[in-house]
Image (cartoon, rainbow, N blue to C red):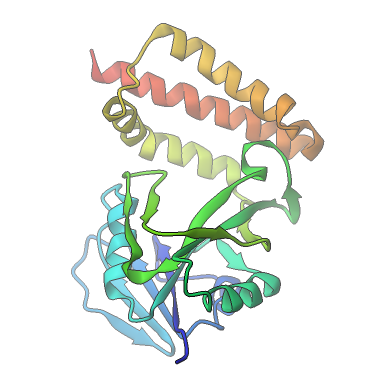
Length: 244
């Protein structure tokens, strides 16, 4: 019996880059969940099935909706600014043959203006993006986690994440998802404090730029460490606004 796989792409728009689409052509099915507040019927363009659903700042709900629409045994989640390399595609096709594994973590490499960021916080990123359809659901509104039951493994080849607009993307995310992140911290019993406000952003920068060797990634490494620190600061400011 042949094992099937669905590539699920979560996007804010119907226009997916050709690089992303080409990279998942090895999958048996391709579905795209598009963020829209308009009521639209599912459509099919070539091999791609489009589904429309308002995001409402809840990425887990969007991914769980994609799971409900997939028809394959396995699901591979790829964001619209990511693509699967040739080596990873081959590794995935072999990995899903193992009957005792329910999910796989994929290493992800950020690429800024064709330069790979191999250090810092993002240099060690591993995401659970490949799993059996019926093995679990996503949780958390942002920074969502796929709660897969059973055994998981880890693949070696990377998923590539294009971040040529990473400065503007970070700024946009701070305003859009900062309040949601603040709510998540509160729900996890990590309340606002002046210590966290002043200490955590500074520690975030030092950790990424010095101890995680972001300095070796040159100027992009410095900017990324700085922006991660700003993000940490902004989330705690949003926490403070909620108690005023």
